[in-house]
Image (cartoon, rainbow over all chains, first blue to last red; front, side):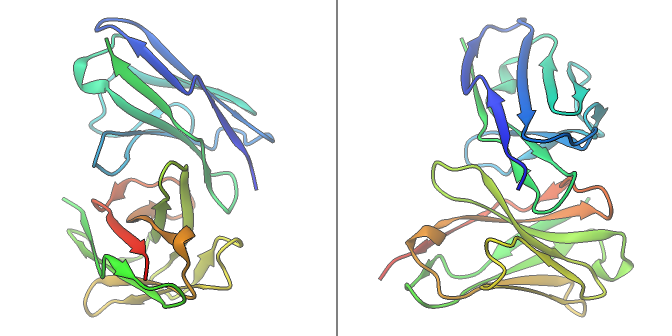
Length: 107
Length: 120
């Protein structure tokens, strides 16, 4: 199975801050990397697919980049509704695997 | 608007079979183009892909669960189901159904999730 490592595991940031979350994979996965946001008691929500493609309806302050084994999710200007836990997921091969999550708190 | 809704018992006894159903609205399973998926989240752990089914009946399972998992589809009801046999406390989790565009591997619509506790 492809192992996913996210960093940091948690962070606290202020409204308006630029936030970056990193995901590293145990082998090269080209651009087959997706990002989700999960808020408490809710299902994960797809933000970014194929490393950098913005899912329909997702605000443009979210962006993704990377290829191979290192990927980043960036929130350009943090908003109060952006709190929650962010997960990366590889879709290079099955079994699909997820990172352990990055918990983002708003200061 | 595509919606998915999980249903099933919230409590299952050890060694029994966990059975959940996902009802899909706003999309037709029989139209093809999507894999219908089960994912779970055990307390304090990462999300875990369980497996998925295509309308044709083709299934793909996580090897870690393959010996205990069956996913089936009922197109007449626009539903798909999960059976997980011989459950233990380690199978306690929130179970989600979701949709994955064929060939893409990401999950664009999710149910709200249902907590299943394995306990005697």
